[in-house]
Length: 203
Image (cartoon, rainbow, N blue to C red; front, top):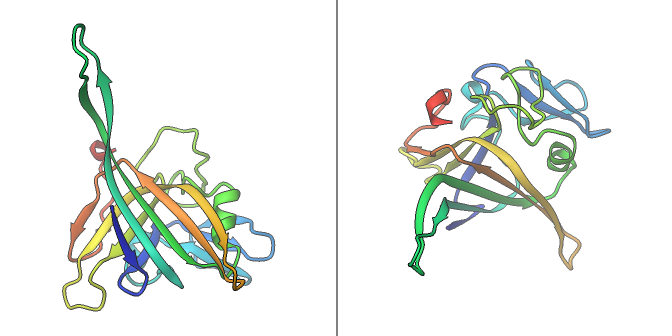
């Protein structure tokens, strides 16, 4: 587990669509629009296409902290006559939890109104979470670890679905919101954002 302060890193969220697939939120009623273009009047972008937005737009504003955890899911295998069990690794799991100062209803609307699983096709159709995973499932999260340097280290976390959302109130009246993403696809670490589509075998 690694915890980073918001001032030390930059975090970006994009869709898994290569050139299409904006997830825009209407501020007035919190409705979601998966569309091929930039937001219209009264709309705000939660995630833009990865090829056009990675480390350019889509940065999480007012970020206070980010926690990255990489683990494994094991299956216990019991043998007759042994107290100890074997651990068979099923798959890896990466979790990113980010906290920011709450300044609107964008994150809450995405979590509550069916945006947790991203796009179904990379363009305008929403994923309802009940279909077979494909390369467009979820979002792509980029954690720029050495922000501002000539060769930053970027952790790219593909096909991450939103697994949790909480709001906390402080005694001074300031509200913070936390959104958690999780994925079983192996992350990529390199000096640039990885905008290549996920391969079928990686799913």
